[in-house]
Image 1: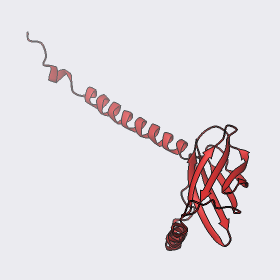
Image 2: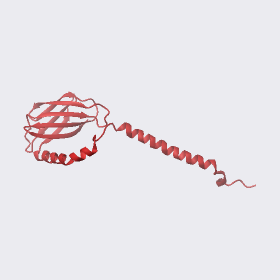
Image 3: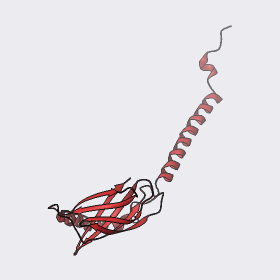
Image 4: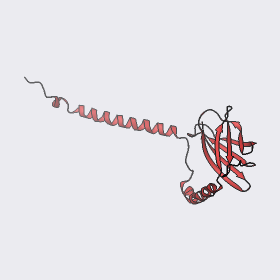
Amino acid sequence: MTPPSPIRRFTGWHMTAILVAFFAVVIAVNMLMATIAVRSFGGTVVENSYVASQKFNGWLAEARAQRRLGWQDKVTMDAARHVRLTLTDAKGAPVAGGGVMAVAQHPLGRAPDLSLAFHEMAPGVYASDRALPLGRWQIRFDLRLTGREEHLLREVD
């Protein structure tokens, strides 16, 4: 008597079980990836994309005007984790007497935003009023000086 063919032993409910297991793995992986994606992104890029699209050309004009100012910036953090902003004009002279405000945001939205006020320590050197907690932060600066305005987005660790 000849043994049954391996192909004959692998039919019926075996194929059904393999297909069910395959799709169960695919669904489980998709659910895992979706959960990780939702938990790791804590915010929105814009609240209303239509309104943002209507403002886009204005934002481009602001960016061109900002570039024409020629201000150069350097953002650092001191040992106590206070943010320091060094600001110079196109010729390298300090931009002194300006008003600097900022909002520190955690890139993934895992920590609440922190408002920062800056005081001028030396001509063109501004320091935050409070220290930042450990971690990476995106800082949105609003700089104002004699009617001129600049907005910066920088990261610090």
